[in-house]
Length: 470
Image 1: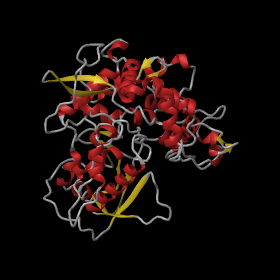
Image 2 (image 1 turned 135 degrees about the vertical axis):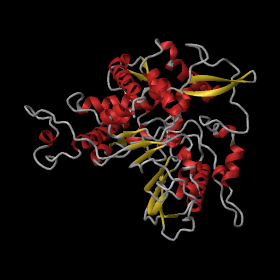
Image 3 (image 1 turned 180 degrees about the vertical axis):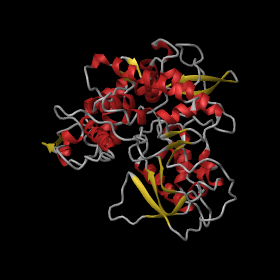
Image 4 (image 1 turned 180 degrees about the horizontal axis):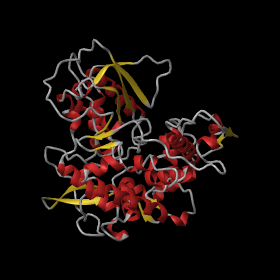
């Protein structure tokens, strides 16, 4: 919601360059500049006031619909925005630098003192070998150490914790469940692979003496700026006339014109709706494109496939850029994802050059998975775009941001994940080094006519890269 609000900001209030730079900092940096932090607080305060009032929300943000959410989820969403807006004062409420270092120490263990060599190894021997050669050693090392991926200004300007990266977990302490707020996001791969390793402009990928001329940060800024430029020009009648400066209102003497209201609606769905979506007749066979992030492949099932119309497409993100997975594990993940997609009623697309980053499928009209479900009538209008919070790759659950144990204090030593039979929604899989047995079991193909089950696919480690939801 914050990203869409930023992308659709009126040009008179925020220019194109400022908009793209703000997005990069909010999306990819653990620490923000004071100006960007002030923007986040203002937007969060606005959203917190609009969420409980559907009529005002429809007037001011016509592209957003929360009608499908339950009341307790709306309350939790409002609490998230209140926290972003600074309802709890002081940097000690969310000490991002200390949380980042704590996560890094836990991740590296005895290798922490050699963390610079570890980051260089992960970059050169893994990410570079997998196609991300434009990521520079200096920017990757800086992100590993501080969490700041895009340093667009002086390094001393980044000191305000990015509260939008906070998430919560229910931990077990002395046999009781307690809530703790912290950072459990990516600390291994980095946000560079989302926008920074490919470009339509081939000059950005040029090399000199075997080294890329542009860094991943520069390519990311270029790609994001072009995306926002297209959004700003969307639907304008003058889009095909005049110079680019005149089209986008950036020329001297040409005032910027606001873009018309977007002709789309983003519908947020309740948590866990991926398993029950097919029960509603308004969603069955409704969608033409289904995108599944690598950390949510376990949700791919025949029930979810029934929501895709015949001829629709499925795109599954593969685990290519997860540095903690070995090559045989990557192949096993790709094979298992293909089995789950076919069990859900999809057929692989024939490609001359198969991609190692995405697996593409389509829904054939005579699929065996196309069956009639007992539809439950619902008054929810068919959405134009559905964003269930539980299936986003980089967004914490809406009800996950809960008060910390004590203001300014991290979870005490000895806090562990609850070991009951049901896994909490916010829990992630342990690192591959801690669960190699489960990964080796998943890589074995099913025997005979055994149908692959979605729960047999392991959840990926909590070091997965933040993939953009745009």
